[in-house]
Structure formats: structure tokens, C-alpha cells
Image 1: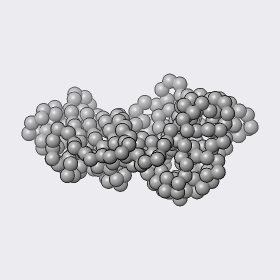
Image 2: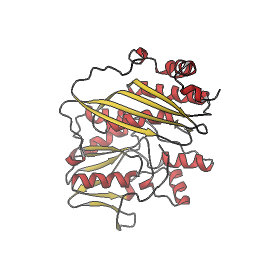
Image 3: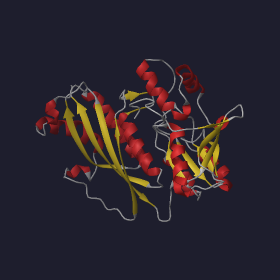
Image 4: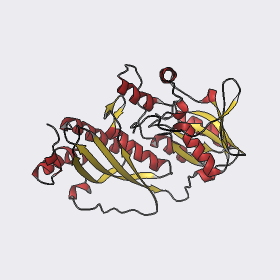
Length: 326
């Protein structure tokens, strides 16, 4: 069965879609009330984030738009030191979308939300003319424990920079699918709570964290440098890149520093805690390939020491590297 404009009418066909797909997978005590807003009990300092997901293809090696939208919003909350609690989701369905495809994506979304420990408490669905596409907006709320302060403004000279794993996996996966290139590259799409939980449970003084998504590592490190008023120095030989991704990037003239990811993060910690933080990361599922890749120093901007010993500027991404990777 395909999505038709009738599925967005608000009538019987809409109700059947709600019960047969969304209600089946998202069932919980808050959402089941089917009221105009979710009533939640939240105390303390909260983090709130929203994001829209327009990736093509909808399903890819290692994930799909459903898994991606949960991981993306949960990770944004985690990077602020929050414990994710609630999500909302808004679906824009294009006429012609296969309902079986929608069902798989909603099922994936529900499974990832359960794994991440978050509850989907509100949602909305609209149907528009089109050619079978799907777009999802998710918003998330998380609670920040008392005394936890994660901000780029906290960085200072001497701090060390850790990267949780290999760069470019998601970007290369999506581009491979679009170009119909057969390889073994999978998206790194995943929730990073195992890493953040490990760091905070060990009382690591995490200065700041960022997930490495659109714009890549080079862009987000420039943002951290600007906010902190410090200089960031990287060592190229320390930055992990999967060999198949590196080969793929070389063929297409891509730089892994600017390739998008959906399951990688950087953390800035004091120098005396860097080795402990690295070992904690490497014991987690999503941080097994973690590495210390650089340091914070006096000055401004972001620089990298190449394998040949030269130093060059790492600027922000200019132009559009690849649309619709998330």
C-alpha cells in the first residue's frame, strides 16, 4: 500500500495509519492519551534540542532515517551533559511512500528510542504531494545533573582533545549508496550515551563535547576554538580513519576532516585526565577506536601538523560538501 493524500486528511484513513503504524510501534502511557500536548514532570536544569532529517536514501547500510533521527537528537542532548528523557517527532510523508517502508522506519525509530532510554511523547503527521519521500523532525528534552557544566567556553590551554573513532563513515556510506558503489562501508549512526556515561561516572572533568556531524571535524573544532578564544592544534597521524573510507575519499577527492558522521564525538578534557578518559572511551562500543588527536593552546584558530611535519590551517567547510546526509 502507498501513502495517499487521504492519509493526511484527518479522517478515517489517517486514523487507520496512526493505529496500524505509529500506534503499534510508539505505544506508551503518555502518547496513548492522544491529547493536544504531552504533560511531563521535569525538575532541574534541562537541555532542549530540535533537528530535521532529510537523508536520502531513507535506508542505508548501518541504519535508516528512523534510527538516524533518534540518534541525532539524543546525541545533541548528550553533548550538553544532559540525560535524554523525551522526544517528539513530526513526519512529512510524500504521496507514494510505501507503507511497508514507513513501518520499517518507525519500528527502527522505536527500537532506537528504547535502547537510548527515551520516550516518544508527542508527534504529528502531514502528507504532501511528491514522489514517495519522507522527512522527520525530532525535538528532545534532557535533564542536566546538578553541577554539570559542559561548554566550549570552559576550554583552556593545556587541555587535550579526544576523538571517539574513525571519521567519514556515514558520509562515505551515503555517497556510496547514491552513486551505486558496492563496498563494505557502513554508517556509524549510533547513540553515544555509552561514552558520556563512562566519562561522567568516572568524574572526568569534561570541558566540552561535540558530535561530529555536518561540516565534519574541521568545522566543529573551529567553532570550539572561536568560542573558547583558544587555538587548537591537531596531529594528522593521530586521527583515525577507516582504510576503506580513506581509499574512497582519496578517489573522490574528499577530506575526512570535513566528512560528516552520525556516531562520533570529540571531548576536551584536562591533560592529567586525558589517558584515563581515552581508556574509558576505548572500553565502550562506540569508542573502541578512540584517540587523543590534539591539544588546546594559546592563540586562535585551528591548525594541523601533517605527516610530513608541516603545519597548515584547518578552516571551516566552505560550500556544500554533501547535501542530505542527515
